[in-house]
Image (cartoon, rainbow, N blue to C red; front, side):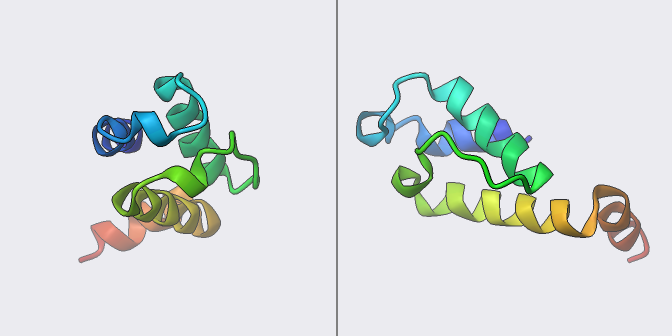
Length: 76
């Protein structure tokens, strides 16, 4: 879902990105954010605000743990 959101948000912004391989870069950014490993392909500064928000949410979920996040959401 997050990769799809980034691809949608960045489809009009591809000219300002340093790399032209949008799918590879978005996939790497999503997995890096979810795994909270701190790696990047260098496109983070060029992303739009909605894409950065998606990555922030992924970093938060990765920090507290996917199972914990799912348990909190399901308790509501």
